[in-house]
Image (cartoon, helix red, strand yellow):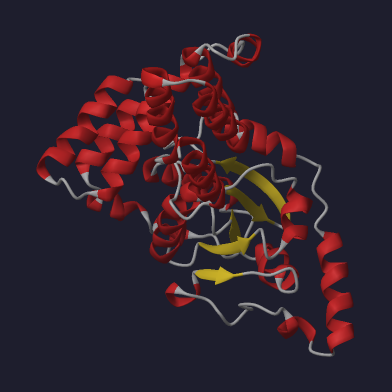
Length: 323
């Protein structure tokens, strides 16, 4: 689970983890070995290869077999932004369309390389990916920056602009086109911009109010619904005591402690632990406490894509605990 935007600390941590620590040569060696075995060169990727670009070639699907040519070698000429995603990841489904849109608007100043981490585990291992979505910028054959989480479009634009400005004199493919995406700022929905800006300021109340106004006029706006759920959780999780898990473990019958601990675990990425904690609490308590725990768990489900296997399993476990 990821908040509507990634925090600055997440971005810094991702960048620090990449700094001088990523060796992309291992992927080339594996790809070459696979190519020799199949006798087909890079075309033997078993998935979308170099010719599978979308949006006029601004978005490409990359496998372990095509990573060297499509990412490393391409990055010698232009910025390559690698989107590490997974089918079960709800925030990935929020982030990827934004990245694809920006790539299509970029005028060729950069290209988006999409990597399914489940189908290509070695790539995620090389980058030391601990959660998805993770986005890594590659230039000159090496990672230069990264962030994790589903950042808002405005923040991604700023990140890209800073990268392109820094690389404009270093890569031949990054020239005046680096500013090609800027005019699209006018097309942003100001209502969402207001909400995102409030969130970035840490003004959760204003962000919630802005998203609620969108829903008041457009009850079916799924983007606003999802963002509102994420903002509410972010506010709640920010106020959670890091000692919540210890307190909950010490008193299994304290429903509030269990809910706080589950929030802390989900926010920290231990999603299955948080779900399992509340399912166990449902089994243990009764009456109003049971209903309160069930509602809290169902609320956590809303942070994720319904197809997420972790959610599906927890729903089954909850049903078994209730009936």
